Length: 86
Length: 305
Length: 94
Image 1 (spheres, rainbow over the protein chains, first blue to last red):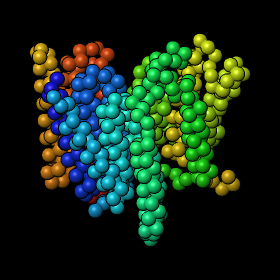
Image 2: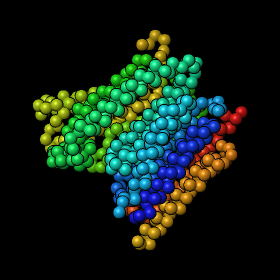
Image 3: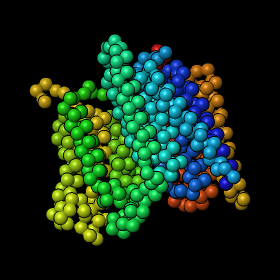
């Protein structure tokens, strides 16, 4: 399927562009949000790669990504500092 | 025709370098950790592209997930300490020299390496029927070269011992509110199921004890963060026992195998699979407990070492 | 190319569009609350569409169940995460 690599590349590009929000902030919440979006993009990229390669193991990697995204989010929220960051 | 994935690969490679640099150059610790986790995510995608889903799983679970959680926890403990004046220059210089040496060594190794296009594939493939499992990676990790895995467990146990000896500040957790309960009710059971699934997969396809342990340990961390489980002083002995059981069990297996076959960590013929399954299951629980214990750390009390 | 493949790729492409929209939102929206809005939409719908496309193209019950679990995990953490991040951001303000 010729289109799949381009969909994956598009998703990767959105993830990389989303990094700008992590760099800029300004608040911790902004960085968490951007990280959440990039994590979901990673899952989507894995699904596309899984279809393209026919390797079913990639769906397991996607599953691990998804559960760890949830746990990373929890850790962010439970430990992040209270004061506003500039 | 060129492979259409080349665009993706080049973008990923450039992205990896950029994120690595941005993470290292960050002045803000929180930003640095988030970028480090993003680096782990991209590196994991890179391993998938290199056709190594086993490494991708390990990188996602341990590299991005658990390490990120440990770093965030460390940051929450550091926050209360006064900022020290920066003595960055000599440290940066030494780090630079060391990195340069490692890079040079890697380049030299790469240039001098014989053309090993086949790697160990053929040797492993030829002996797969003796291993007791059908996934070559698990066969290497838990049979052919299981002493490597044993030493990794030793490293982990040593790390935990040091953390317990040094003691650490209690985690300053923020209350997560009532909506966190339904969240934990989904995440924790699912993490247990996924850990079991990964462990079961390990015998035939990418998966295995370490990845399963990372997911299980992460589920435990959610319990602790949501204050569904509050680690008590009196639970310490029990937790230490569970942490020690992985290493202890593995060493016992090594001694047992030595007695039965006269060769360290060579499992009795025909029973390889059952040995590997028991060792892997024990390791999963024990490593998960170790990771969660590393996260919690030990509060140093008066009158206790 | 069969109809199922066409549909699958179409859904994936549509999902990718939601990711683009989410990223534009997170970069261009003026404050953290409107950005929150952008991200949760992209997360749920975008990944939902990509997962649906994947499911159609693999046509396998076990994979479909796994995809549903992946989507559920992301949706739950998106919903709860959105709520908690908003709380966090509100506290930061005061």
